Image (cartoon, rainbow, N blue to C red; front, side, top):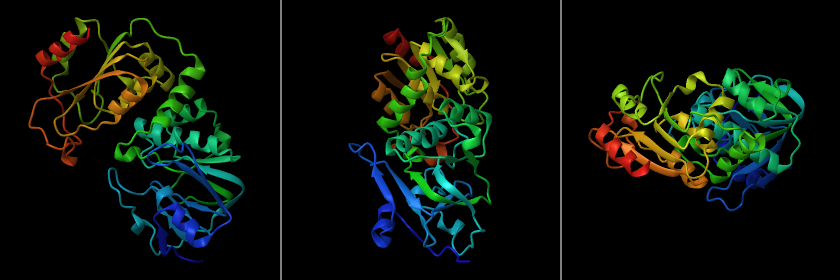
Length: 339
């Protein structure tokens, strides 16, 4: 048995060094960050928090493994260094990777799991099984909507190690760094909305998405905000209570969406072009991922920053959990220009 001694930072470095009998397909060739799919004969996957891809020469490939912390860029190789992988379970099949460290989060579930299915399909490599996260009900619902039945799934556990006839690994989208690719937005919209012919719901034309059930980044004067918004016909929504198919319907029905920054705004993917969006921010945590989605899909996007001192670079890691206090007269002025 051989321990893990080293790793390749990039898939192409492994291919250049070892010249394996594998295929590496570049998908969506006009992207700034080139997404790809690589097929590794006899490749192994060792499940940990996110898991690692191990080559036949016992090295990890970093860019198709995902063990860093959120918003970190350095691979956590120490999780694997000098360890002896258990004896793998062998699959005489092609096994694709569709797991992600933060797959329990709705945003990462969509962009680091569901969207990568597009890369696999475009590669035209036949797949018999998929490595997925330990499934929560929402993950099970999404994979079923995407046509991946339970019998084709291999769930990640801390001690999972498999070896496949061909281990097929799609590249990551970069969502852990706030990157949202245009191709991923269009794939998710087409697959989950347009191809399903979703009908709109009456009474959901103006919606406010609450984070009242979240542990952080709440609107602390939400009652005051809602007293004002209710007078304008806004509906109060807790997305945690809704299945994915209902989330899609709600956002598809909206003409105006107001929400604090959070994973629920991933559902902007399902809004109609021209929908007005107001994203509420704390002063020190202002990521642009939902603005990017809005730009790709032709939504009319605005942002409103809450009260408090503003970090000059818009994102301060210490502000990740910071709550939001909205200036209601300022919100009134912004809505007055929009509706």
